[in-house]
Amino acid sequence: QVQLEESGGGLVQAGGSLSLSCAVSGRTSSISTTAWFRQAPGLERQFLGGIRWGRVFTSDAESVKGRISISRDSAKNTVNLQMISLKPEDTAIYYCAAGSPILSNQRSNSAYTYWGPGTQVTVSS
Image (cartoon, rainbow, N blue to C red; front, side, top):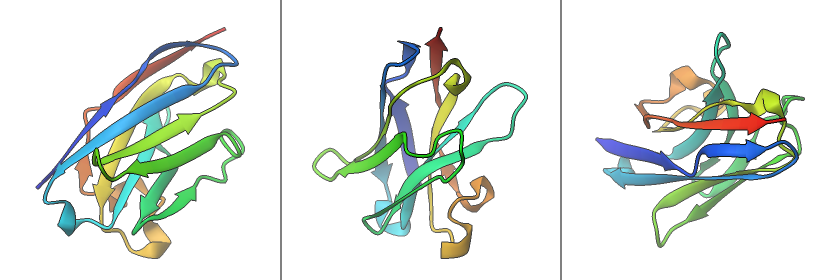
């Protein structure tokens, strides 16, 4: 089993930046990839970015393109998400996920086995 816990959510002003952290624990040797998703009310869960065997990959969706950075802190066993130029439409629950998806499926939420409880991010205008 792998346990995930997100932190760093809250209320952010439009135009500001966001920094979230995902603490990964348990049988981490059983996973290849840790990724970030988000879900706004009434919408599908959206892939944001991830790290697979140390290699970062991010979403090309126009809604987030160029605004996301993914990093890993090996000493703390965390995978971090930073997002800049926040907009009210970035309001969502942000989730951390982990698993061993095949390369062609690593942007799909159905490919991940483990999920954190999520952290709410609200962007005020």
